[in-house]
Length: 123
Image (tube, rainbow, N blue to C red; front, side):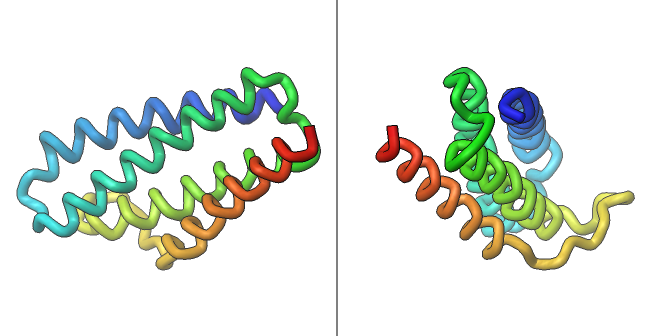
């Protein structure tokens, strides 16, 4: 299971850089508030990509609270960042309508940090 965190971390890192570049060059005409939202999502995604890679590198993320943290981080990035991206660029052909999951994703990210803290206390 822990290898999954390395894969998701790398994927999230790759796509956060790509989305940051796309926002800087392809979304310049968006309203400032939408661009700020995309920038925030890119930062959250990049940060949690590093966290997931760190979980993978720790060698202890295969079960228990560390695995729960990884799952919450993964779900949180997909739900939070995906919703923000989809809301900011609804006119892009092929983009699916995504229900407003940003609050659920944000809570999942916070719970992931709590699970990581509990895992640290248990060591």
